[in-house]
Image (cartoon, rainbow, N blue to C red; front, side, top):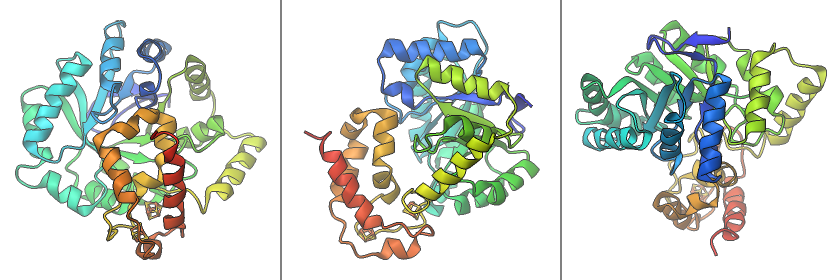
Length: 339
Ligand code: SF4
Ligand code: SF4
């Protein structure tokens, strides 16, 4: 129950792994200490990304300080074979490794993303080459759109799949998880706290861990939070009455103002990457305001300002979110960090 093998990859790890997003927002010393502490506690699966600024470098430095076997997973948004092969090389250098256990195509959220990475010359062929060269062990995929993920699972090209899974985002338990289990595709659950939105972390973690055969990655940068998560992980996953109440209360509270990052609202005529703009607060909370200075985010804010309030996106959002209004609120919120 507490350890598992990730699908057919043969990667064996504790079911609670370490998510490498929040270590970007603290000092390098604190970040390295957090990773070392988590590994010493027993977490032996670490996930990061080329996109998480300093995360790979810091994890690389931490790995040099421990003498334990840890499975490392990272990912890239690059959609071409050449591009992702270059990223594999950079990841190896940043992580100070000769081999990465799992390399994932990051954020495959549309059919077009999926088509691009699986086409000749696409990222998957680049990763297969890296696998042949012994640079990576396995190839996985991450994404937020369950329709696209359902197709990906059906096709079975990837060995692992990373999904958002929490009591605020439970839909994968019907749509993707059963099929992935049936096909022995390793399942990694990200965002057990819905990107920091859920303020009942113990209940949130119990909820996800109560689904067997899923490896949960929790992003943490403080030792006391690592202790807290590890304590929950080691215990039973039965909810107390208070925890059940918290789950009900938070689910109701966020029902109509939480973006599930599914991308069903796209395309936007103004080319606004809606889910990223909607998730601005969560990005800043998890990665620190420095993330706003990266070219990808800078471009996103420029586009967000072009919202015409046409309402096309609202017709497609299954959660009836007031998208243009939320975009405006987020732009205003962001201004304080842009001076
Ligand atoms: S309301 Fe704004 S975000 Fe929505 S589709 Fe129109 S321009 Fe895009
Ligand atoms: S705004 Fe709605 S449709 Fe668009 S990503 Fe968020 S939850 Fe999905």
